[in-house]
Image (tube, rainbow, N blue to C red; front, side, top):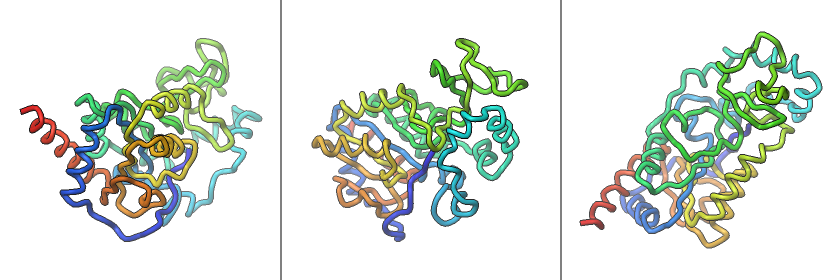
Length: 272
């Protein structure tokens, strides 16, 4: 459950119309575009980041690196601590956040039949709320509960939390929040999904992340290393800006809708 780190250059940038047009062209010319999204998109929906100025971990310190091991040692206590923090500075913004125009733009690219898959590092559920269908939440989803035995996921309202730790209604395994804790392996089903789609991709849009947190970053870099196109959308220069084929300066909520408009117009002109 880790968001992107600090950017390399704190000078905000703004994509030109020509850059956006060029990005629209390469997206339309690709056969299997995917996207990788990160903390920048969450921040634009009012969710505080973990790292950097104003970050929750900057203010309060990082969670213990053995967070998952502590859960397994005493699941009841871990659940009690989690339920008691539902209105704290991290969880309250999640309950109030709504998809921003960047989330909606990626969902629209999917609806147009262009964007094939989204890998997000965010746990905020906002891509789902925007209507994204083909999606992997690599660090989990704060609204879901996952069985550590069979891997099934449930909405919170489906699970009785009056007895802790809750048990899976299918296999009686221990249930845990779907968000991936420090020390916890990324669920295999999610990794397999990401690998399958990244293996087919010939273009990746990297939005709101510097693509330095693994394993998520590895899927985007794999596309580039195989000769695919990398399109970055970031307000600042990042660690990957120098290797991107196109780097669009600006926040995702501003740039991605511009990109969808350009893609739609170009598609119409090519069809006429």
